[in-house]
Image (cartoon, rainbow, N blue to C red; front, top):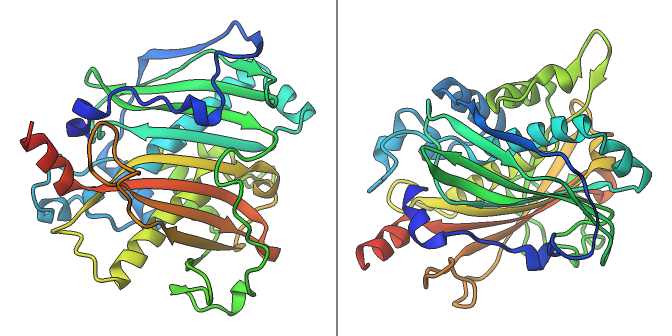
Length: 342
C-alpha cells in the first residue's frame, strides 16, 4: 500500500528467522537479478486468481472497489497471494538454475518458508520488478538456504522479505494440534468445539490451481501435464485459501467490508513440501483460523496501530499439517488517520 511506505520502511525480521549474515558456510556466487525484467498483471489475472481461491475481498473486485470508504487505491489491486506465488515460481526457477534442489533433497530441507512484509499495492498494468538476492547457506543453529526478496513497482517498494528452506518449520512451531476432534464431523464454517479455531473446509481442484498459477504469472505446465501425468501442487495455493476463510469468518461476525476494510501488512508461512507432494485432486483441506486478541504490544511498525493477527493452519487427513501461517492485518481507516495526524 503506497500510504504504508511512509512509516513501515525496511522491516527486517531476520532476528526471528536467523540472520543470514551470520555463520555462513557458503555464499553461492549466483543471483537472479530481475530488476530490468518486468512482470505485469492485468485485471483478468486478478479475476482468475480471486475466482480460483473464492476470495471476495472488495479491494480486488473491478466494480466493488468503488464501494470501499476512503479507498486510496483508485482501482482494484493484485492479491497478496498472487505476488507470493510469483515469488514462489521465480524462486523455483532460481533453485533449478543454480542446482540447489540437490542440497535441499540431500539434507531433507522439507519446509519452505516465506516471510513477506507488504509495503505498497500493485495495480493492473503496473510493471513489477523482482530482485532475488544471492543464496546464503548457513549452519547455525540449523542448515538453512536463504534469499532476501525485494519487489518494486513505479520506483516504490512493493514488498520485502525472505525465502528460506529448512528442516523444520520456522513459524508457529509450538502449536499442538494432535488433540483436535475428528474434523470431518465438525460442520463447515463453525468453531471447533472446545477450541478457538474457526474451521473452513475446502477441496483441492486441479483446474482452480492451474488458473491460480496462470493468474499469478507462473507457468502452469511446470506443475501440471496430463500427457505425462504430472500433477504437483504449488506451495502457495493451499495457503491462499485461508484468505477466503478469514473473509467468511468476518462475514459471519457481521463485519462491514465497505466501512471497515482491512489490509494485509505481512505473511509468515511455513509449508511442508513432503505433505504437499502427496496432495491431489479432490483432497480435503481443513483450514483452521485463530484470531489473537489485539494488544498494544503488537502494533504496526513506528505507529500505535494495533495489528489484528491470525494464526492459520492447513490440515490434511490424520491432521497432518500442510502449512502454518501467521497473517497480520490493520484497518484501512487507522492507517489513513495516522497519516492525517502527521
